[in-house]
Each structure stands twice: as C-alpha cells, then as structure tokens.
Length: 62
Image 1 (cartoon, rainbow, N blue to C red):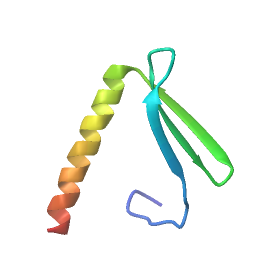
Image 2: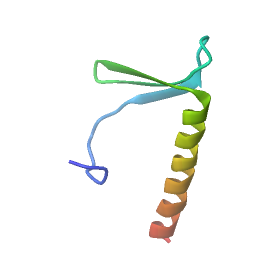
Image 3: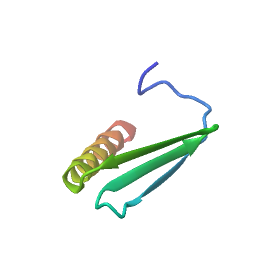
Image 4: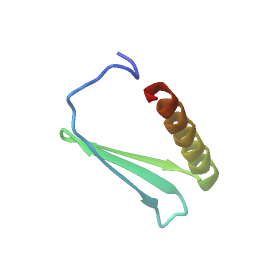
C-alpha cells in the first residue's frame, strides 16, 4: 500500500484552529476519529506541501 493505492474508504476532514492556538486536522470515518494538532508554522508547511502536490498533480493530468 502506498500513496497511489486507491481504497473505497469514506472519511470527513475538518480543519480549524483550537482554543490552544494550534491548527487541528480532524479526520473521521469508519468508526475512527483522528485529531492531529500542529503549531501554526507546521500548518503553513503542510499547506505549502499540499499546494506543491496540487501543482504536480496538474502537470501529470495535462
């Protein structure tokens, strides 16, 4: 299994700030909940990685 392995799993993703000054990614699906907290700098790095992946995906699909 890897990033290119497709699965038939549904999940919900919520993203928002916590009352502790962190950024939380909250993943919920199939009876599991995964809260992932990041400091703002880490969250910005993740956002940059997502943008870079989107740009790379566009290049592959065109």
